[in-house]
Image 1 (cartoon, helix red, strand yellow):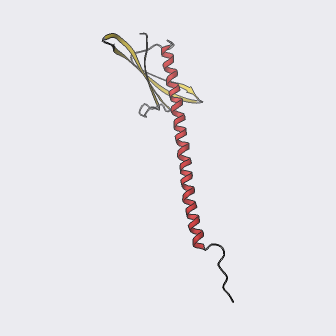
Image 2 (cartoon, one colour; image 1 turned 180 degrees about the vertical axis):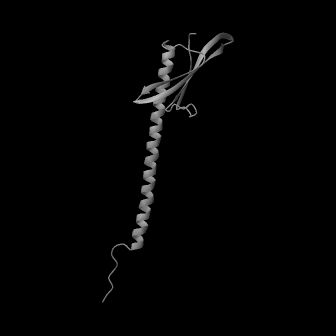
Image 3 (cartoon, rainbow, N blue to C red; image 1 turned 90 degrees about the horizontal axis):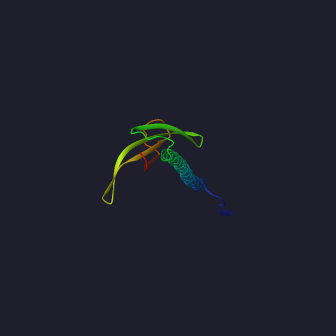
Length: 131
């Protein structure tokens, strides 16, 4: 009786192929997970910046009166509540050797939680042209 050539894969070859496939799929799943996390973080930072811009625009339009203190509030954006903090400081501006006097400098920080110890998702600094 003559020996027939082997057909198919051995058990060892199948185990090696499955191991390689498992490692590759694990890397693809981790990459997809990281991508989703980064996209969510960028979305949150974008919304936080929009909230900061809206608060700044309210001060610039005169809808909110500036106070030399820290003002805290919250705003709704994208069906979520965002917590902001506005700090107003008089800044002495010197332009080309001419002192313009105290100009209100406003810094707005926006967080997704009502916890001032967390780092803000967005920070916006501007100057108001009225006192």
